[in-house]
Image 1: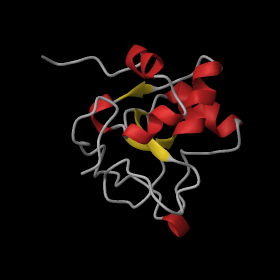
Image 2 (image 1 turned 60 degrees about the vertical axis):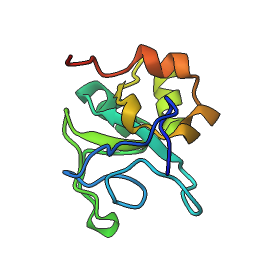
Image 3 (image 1 turned 135 degrees about the vertical axis):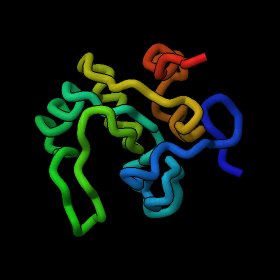
Image 4 (image 1 turned 90 degrees about the vertical axis):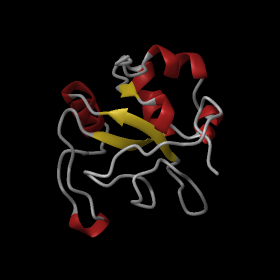
Length: 122
């Protein structure tokens, strides 16, 4: 069973829009996932603008990849290196740690992810 960055079973990131490299709602990775789509984010307008400026327009739909285009508030499995790049630029989006795959820690420090985690609704 895939694990999240907390060492617990990986929870789904989002089914609407359906996300993940495998479009199964989970931020899983495996052979062929060269982008390492393992970070479950909550898209913000600032991050979407940052990503578009870096050549990765996440707001525009692309039917070739079954991609609906994101709007602020959408959850999405983002490439770990892109999140790290956004962090270094001061534009890192919030992260759902429960739905962020353990493989993310090969690219990003847990402390950085924890500093950007979605606030708990306890």
